Image 1 (cartoon, helix red, strand yellow):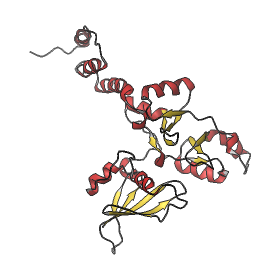
Image 2 (cartoon, rainbow, N blue to C red; image 1 turned 180 degrees about the horizontal axis):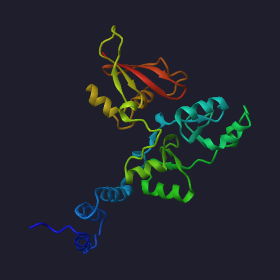
Image 3 (cartoon, one colour; image 1 turned 90 degrees about the vertical axis):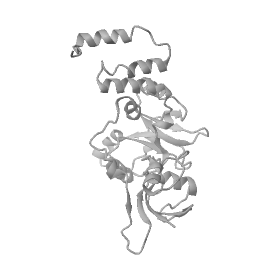
Image 4 (tube, rainbow, N blue to C red; image 1 turned 30 degrees about the vertical axis):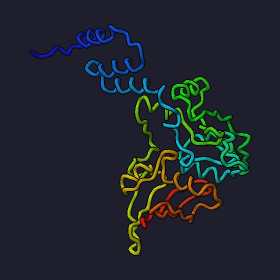
Length: 279
């Protein structure tokens, strides 16, 4: 006998599942998971995302400090335009020129448009910055989502227990926890954004070129390493944690266990490319 699968049967079955009201979040989550026979998979996944949101700390969804594309309050217009064009982002945290870990404002790319049409060279971005919104690492994702919605803000700066910037989170980051990855025309495929490739130099052995945003867990898996990702998530973050703040990142060499890392591409604030040598 073929089981009836009409919409009316599905609704009767769903009402049956809902006959006993769940008393806890876990019971409600189980109810949603058991309703897969009545609901579309995407709908179930979205409901699971909504129910998981209160249990998700903002540190789990934020972009870490080492991966933030940012500006400094004393940057000149031409330098800012290079960052805008290369990143294709529309909002940028602006760091203090005197305290490199402190965000003093948010610059919206659209606020620079009047100056571009007027061909103005000297622009003080301090006058254009928006007031940043700060949230602690321990904040719940659903609370931050509600705050961003109420304040009509798309980005928040995440701070650690000492008040230093540890990352940023966007409205899109949190929504992706509910609806899954949201890709746009500027997103780069994972295989292009994160890579570990053997060094082509024939004079070197056991040497790889590593993108700084490569997750530590991925590096460990590919190269059979055992670096901890408890405090930082990326290989660039691991090296910054080890060497601290230096005036010139490029060319720095760091010894970690059986590995030697050389920073072969970096700007004043961010590591981009690393040479990793297993010794």
